[in-house]
Image 1 (cartoon, rainbow, N blue to C red):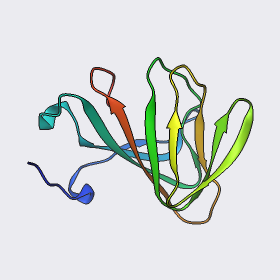
Image 2: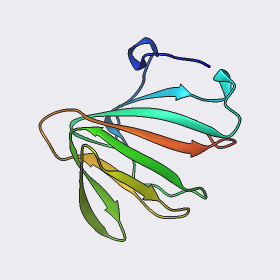
Image 3: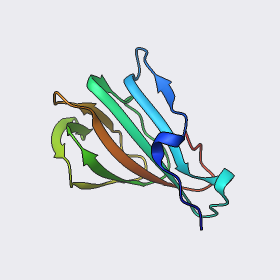
Image 4: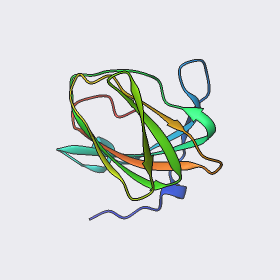
Amino acid sequence: MKIANYTSIKPILFDNEQAKGVSARVMIGKNNGAENFCMRLFEVAPGGHTPKHTHAWEHEIFIHAGFGELFHAGQWHSARAGDAILIEANEEHQIRNAGSETLIFVCLIPSGVPEI
C-alpha cells in the first residue's frame, strides 16, 4: 500500500496555446508499482483549458471541485464537482474551466500509455 497527499507531488505546469493554466500530477503510476492503471490529478485555473485531443484509449474522470465544460461531438457540456465522466477511445475531447474557482479533477488511464 502507498499513501501520498497530492500536495507532496510536484506538478507539471502547462501554459501555452494548447493547454492554458493546467497543472498535472501523477498520483499513482508505474513509478509507484501500479501495473494496470495510472491516476492523475489536474488543476485548471479559471479561464484555463486542456488541449483538444484524441487517443486510442478510454479514460475516466471524476470532478472533485469547481465547474467546467467538456467538449464532445462538436458541443460543450457542463460538468461540476461530483460528476463522473467516461471519455471513450478515439473520442475528441477537451476540458475547460468555466467557473471562477480552480477546477480539480482526477483522471484514470490504462498503464502503458503516456502518464502525462
